[in-house]
Image (tube, rainbow, N blue to C red):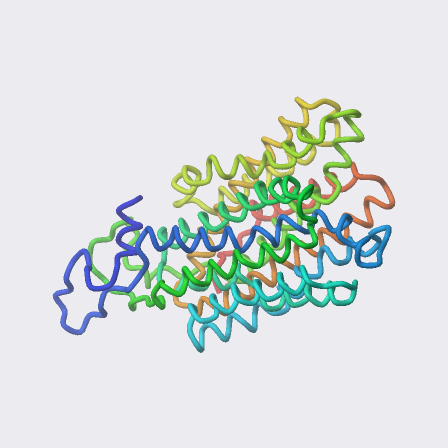
Length: 416
C-alpha cells in the first residue's frame, strides 16, 4: 500500500515513470508523505481548542453573566451550525481561488475568533465569537479539499483516514489539557492561548505547495486489476451524503449524556475512569485505523454496513451495562464500528472526489456531517429530558440498525 501512496503523492518533477506519449499529462504535483503529515498536524492543533474548550462552557458562562450556564447547550452547537452553513461557500471559493489560500484563511479565521472569545467580557460578545469561529473556520472542508486536489484513490483515502485520526487525538487530549491548566488559567482565558495554535498552523501551511493533480493517464499497468480509472464511475454523492449523515447522527447522539449515564449506572465511579470510558472508542480508532484502511480498501460498502451493525450493537450494550467492565466492552464494540464506518466513508469519499471539484464536494460533505451532529444534539436533549440518558443510546441503536439494513438491502449503484 505504501507503493500506491508514493505513486499518488510523488513530488513534482520526480515521476516514477516518464510518459512516452508527448501529449500525455505531466505527473501530478501531489504531496510527499511528510507534507501530508504536516497537514494532519495542523488539523490537530486547529481542532485542539475547538474540541477541548466547549465541554467547559458551564464553567465559562457564570463569569459572563449566566450564573447557571443555561445557555451552554445552545452555545455548544453554535460553531457547528455556522460551520455547516459556511462550508459550501468556502468550498466553492477554494475551487475558484485556490485550496491553499482558503485553508490558510480557515486557520487564520480560527485564530481571530479564539482571540475574540478569550477577550470577550459579555455573553453576547462571547456568542458572536463562537459564531465567527464556526463561519470563519471550516478547517475540515478546507483541509480535505486541499488534500483531494493533490491526491486520489488509496493515497487520498489514507490521508482522509489520517485527518480523522488527528481529530480523534484532539478529542481525547484537548479536554485533559484544558482541565489540567484550569487551576492556573481559567478555561475562558485559555481561548487567548489557544489562538496561537491555528496561527502556528497557518505559518507551517504557508510553506506547503498549492496542490495540483494531473489529468488521469492510462499507463497500462492496471495496478489494482480494475482497468483505467476513467472506466469506473465515481461513488454517487447522494448515497455518500446519506450515509455520512446517518453515521454522524448514530455515533454523536450518545456523546452529550454519556458521562451522566455512566455515573447513574455505576455510582461513585472515579471521574477519570468515566472520562476514559468516553475516550475509549476514539482510542480504538487511533490504534487500528491504518490497518483497517488496508483491510477495507477493496470492499468499503460491505465494511460500512458492518460498521453500522457494530455501532448498533455497541450502543445497545450501553443499556444493560451496570459495571465498569460491561461499559468498557460496549465502548470497545462501538469503537470497532466507529473505526470501520469512518474509514469506509473516507474510502468512499476519495472515490467520489474523482472527476469532481473537491472544494465544493467536501464543503457540502461538511454541511451534511455538521447537520447530523446538530440533529443528534437536539434530539439527544429532547430524549434525555423526556426519558433519561439511557434512551439516547437506544435512539442511536435504532438509527444505526435501520441504516445498516438499508445499506445491505438497497440495490442502489452508488453512482449517478
